Image 1: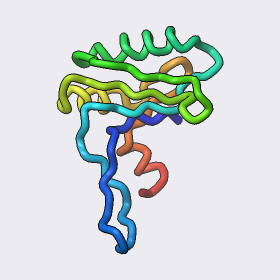
Image 2: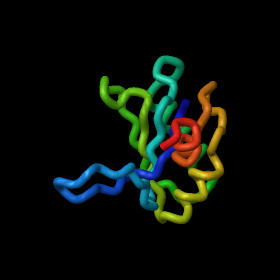
Image 3: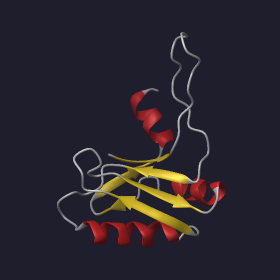
Image 4: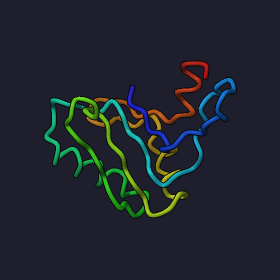
Length: 112
């Protein structure tokens, strides 16, 4: 499944039991499970920009082909409200044969 998530997670105090991560609103969306072999990096970035810019002003799209970052991207909006709107609107959106899922939907699926 492809995940669209707000970047950033809450951190607990040192020495205490780790709490479940919470996602605070942020203008950067994290996108995972993107196609890695079907599309070139520049085409992927352009497609992500076009898709996400329908919801507001996109400042940057970062998609790398390194081993650690393959299939993932970060999309940065001008403001938090636009990023939140895009995240909600693109839930279960089919992107090159992959389904986008918001962090709320992932919590439902995995019981977090």
